[in-house]
Image 1 (cartoon, one colour):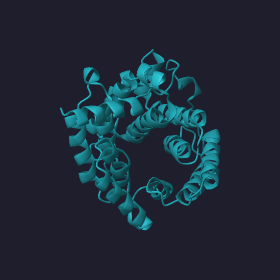
Image 2 (cartoon, rainbow, N blue to C red):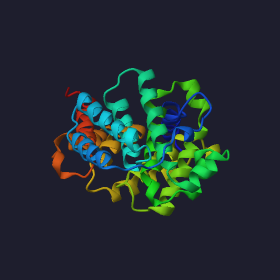
Image 3 (tube, rainbow, N blue to C red):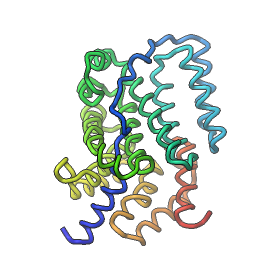
Length: 291
């Protein structure tokens, strides 16, 4: 491996390595409730989804999240509300929260909601109740829980990048291996899920992990290519490749081209949730110095 490539891998490791928390993982299953759908909770879900579909600001996003929380007050085992709150805490943390400690809180909340969504799988909950960690019980999760697994991984990786300081990143490096466990379970049960996001998350793990813990730059590049092949209808891929991948490889021209593509894209032409598309464009403009 050339020195330049080695340096890139080292810098990625130092900037992305983290865990989900400096404290040991603690089960959330005690907080999990059973599904209890009612007419009121169904109406609130419709309202919350409409609000989220129009959430182009922090205030609108928080309003949608508050409505999903009302759903859970009635129907605490509502899987869709749980994973959407996980997704929304990630977005709130990365797009609208400047302080590191507050970002970490949102990413931790995202993981909590994703775990609660996983616990709606009775076999998974039984294993965790018996002492297993979520990643140790991943083999009983199904395609139904693919979203919960992917958003859990995403929350960890955002905490790697934006939440943890270097000592915590080094201490908690094993969480990237736990991410790989979930990613591989998604691949086994829902291989077409995620529009390339699963493959991108795997690429990040391979680049960020030390070789001794399964890191592999060649595999990382391979999965980055796979990610782009799977997401022609998603804005996420070009934004993520420009923001992260080309920066790692010091390809400034390609990075600029991807981010300019994101800035010029028609928002309505893609399948990513609208609030994320807004974030991708806003972030690309910021990186390019246009805001």
